Length: 174
Image (cartoon, rainbow, N blue to C red; front, side, top):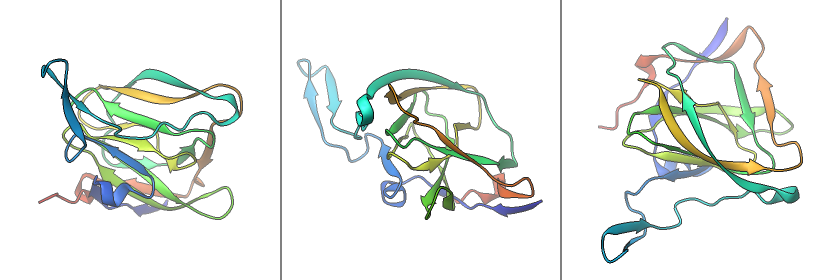
């Protein structure tokens, strides 16, 4: 197999900006509410789901852990809406996305490691891998699009090519 080994970078707003938003409270606009008993972290990511009569869906996805090495054999995209994943735990997970290439195939593939409860919100039409949980089964609050129209495209890499992530591929934040 002619796999390309991916380097896994820490998930930061700057590194991820071309693909969507990192959903986190660090550095976010916030203010007290409910007589000071709660803090509102405001407008953390856009929700773009109204194309062709779409509506927002609020879901829970339960991801089962993957083991290294992880073969990236396919990517998907949602041309009619954004998709937001917010972990309900503080466990790390992998985020794999690709640049938009000409035509209907993904471009260069990138990998990121979330930490401390970071979520991601993929922009509409961004190629990404389905949920890649690492340590234990974990729940995610997912906001995406429901409604008419074809909102899922998949790209399967040829059987003798693709990408692989190994535990040694992860770049430390420090």
